[in-house]
Amino acid sequence: MRLLIVEDDEMLREGLAVGLRLAGFTCDSVATRADADAALETGGFDGMVLDLMLPDGSGLDVLARLRAAGSILPVLLLTARDRSHDRVTGLDAGADDYLGKPFDLPELAARLRAILRRSEGRAAGHMIWNGLDLDPAAMEGTRDGRNLRFSRREFTILRALMERPGTIIGKSTLEERLYGWQEDVESNTVEVHVHNLRTKLGAAFIETVRGAGYRLARPAGADA
Image (cartoon, rainbow, N blue to C red):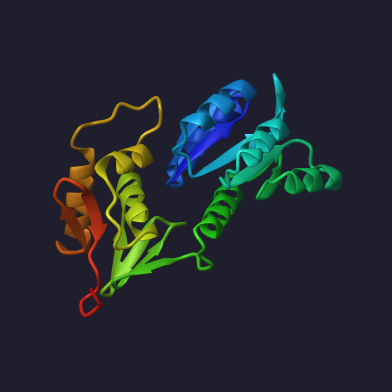
């Protein structure tokens, strides 16, 4: 899941990016309202962590522009203003959740998983397909009685495919999920991680659709 972090405190911004990457997210970060607006215009994000107090305006202005444009991008507000009135204002402005500073990173990651899950129309925390029970919180799964652990990038690809099982996902789309702005894209990364996933899940679990991308294979006996 690719996140945009909007936070003007450099140390906190970098700490958030590092911590959320370890939790399985791909993160890009900016420090100002103007940069946030510009980043959102490029698209490609699955959610946003948004500070309210920015050096060139309020995070609520970023949120207002986003919602006025019809975007349903999940947004979690993160701010030192943690009074009831501030929470109500932020939620009524279109935020999906609100977390006051200081905060615990595991709670932030859990709240993000929850609002992203709701945006996908899922209620359950686990994702299940073709015998695989995937736990996004732990980046682990079980299949055929085996416990499976995944690297962050293996998990990112697997989750992207499990969000839309049976749908072909292009290589470029998967690369967008894997890499932030500051990271160099390696030409064969997707192929390498798909190979590793097949080693763990079985060669037939992920299908290659030549010239189009990848998709999860239908369970045996499922309707075509």
